[in-house]
Length: 564
Image (cartoon, rainbow, N blue to C red; front, side):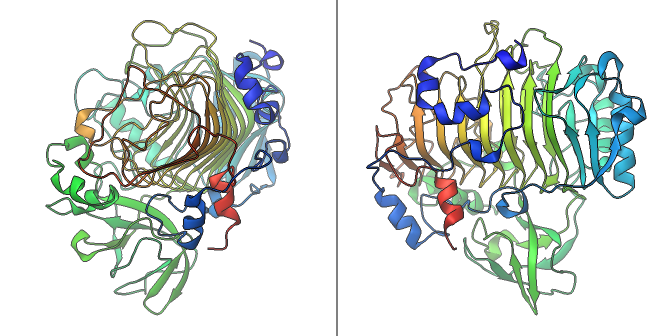
């Protein structure tokens, strides 16, 4: 379907989300940020009691997480504008699609990165790319002329380009079902070690601490602190400085009290069997990258408040991490994969879109991906912003995936378009995915013509989905060994459900210490989940059946406006 011919296919969706769709369904071309509504609500909207409670305890509320600093540069509105340092045409790229331009684009990106960073321009046109586009240096931006004007036409998949990427748990599953991108933002050395491991048919650890999860050094041990604190005391601050990116590392103990804390604590978590959840327990230690904003004697202050308590039983340490990618982005282009049928579930070949890995303070803006297996990925990525992004074409497995300890990311003004081909037998559709102890991530102002709020086990916690219209026709996944669907403090706030399906939207009866506010009236369908934890869930349901009738209409925007 042509870029300028796309339109929302469901009249009801269009009517319920006119303001958002007008900005997002115009072909993905660059539009002013103000085109999407900031926090519109109906006249006569009411204020939920939960919001009044939250304002009194914004960093420690039991059901609502503080996400007001999610995204790059602690949620800064503007994106950095780095000076132009290269044009891919000067490196031999062809914008008529007549020859492979991947090598030329990668040469331009690498040259700019090696010279300290800047913007690489991809002028309007169609560029055939027969390889992965790699951004491996910090402070490098790949910028097209707009998603309606610059297209990268990807002809090969990741299995062809890199190799089969199996699961660390055995079997014939393809890890390209949840990893990797044909535009891949990942530190140069990390990318090399990952791809070498894959080519040698070894499973590489994907997270913040290297292939054996051992590439870290203790900078200081950390004293007790509470969730919501901005500062901690440390044993020795001599290795710490303002502006430094560090990692807070919390190890679980034999009684799994850290995992129980992530789930909100209480009788249900005490009786839950944690030991046999081998996939879940492989996700700890919990690793939280964060930037230091001040060091005063033995006290260290962060740019975000603590996501969890810090207790001596969890051996709390401030450590190094693999050298991350920082300050890099991709803007103003469409990545279109050659159209092939969607693969059967977990056998994806790797026609994937844009993935951020071991990335911090990075971004995508005005990006469309088409005919992909998986759209936009966050893999051990934190403090990144995805703005004005769109997934469209023949249908995808994960339009968005967020996993392997990804925290504090912001996805706003996004669209998952209705598929243009019927789903082949044996395929699966998820939606906006989060898993693997990922926390404090936000999805804001979205239109989902298909998919669901895919909480994919691995006990993610403290995430927000707000001001979204969804045709809830996807299903969640997740292996039983990955443990609970939800940890504590998931918030679904102002969600319009077009097909009355409850699954994964109305979560007050399944998610502990959660808040479901101002969602449509819904009913159960064939995938009905039961709570993982016994006893009281301490969840909250308010303004049920009244999407759009509350203020604030957007929980994330309202938190940004608070002085915390």
